Length: 103
Length: 124
Image (cartoon, rainbow over all chains, first blue to last red; front, side, top):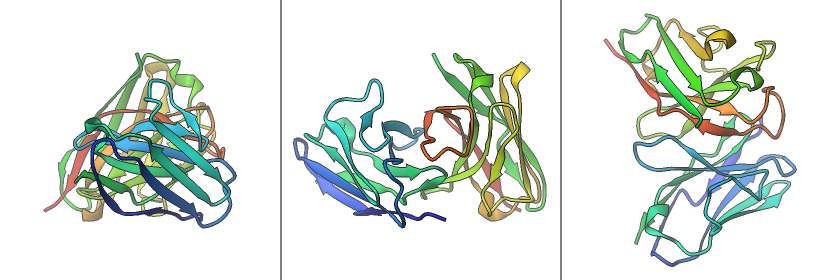
């Protein structure tokens, strides 16, 4: 089975910062990598699919890149509503999550 | 507007059974695969089971194989999860999620809509 490893597990940042979260697959997955945002007490929300395609309605400050085994989610300028936990996913496997906290 | 509403959760003793339901609306239910994803308290997301549009393909996580059964009723726009022989480690919030396509095996699958979840607590 393919394993998905996110780094860091947690991250502190300030409003306006540029933030990057990394996801690494245990073997090549082409561009089949998706990103979700989950706020406390809420269901996950799809942000990015196929590594770099922005889901409808998601702000353009979110972007994704990568292929093969290494992928990144970037938030260009953090907004207060972006503080949440982020998960990568490939098929039925999720990464362990990255908790983004306010510094 | 796509809506997924889960129900059927609750407190149950170890070894007992529970049936979860997910009522779907706002899209053509029988065009899409559906999934159950769970989240234990304070933990990450774990895929539990998925079913293709016509119930022809079904998959389970190893942790629930042989104990859980997924099914769907396209006439009722509903998804189900029959959970037997429940264990303490099955305690979680169970989400119903819509796939972006009809099959469950595609490498490019993703879950574009999620319900709010139903909480299952397994405890004596």
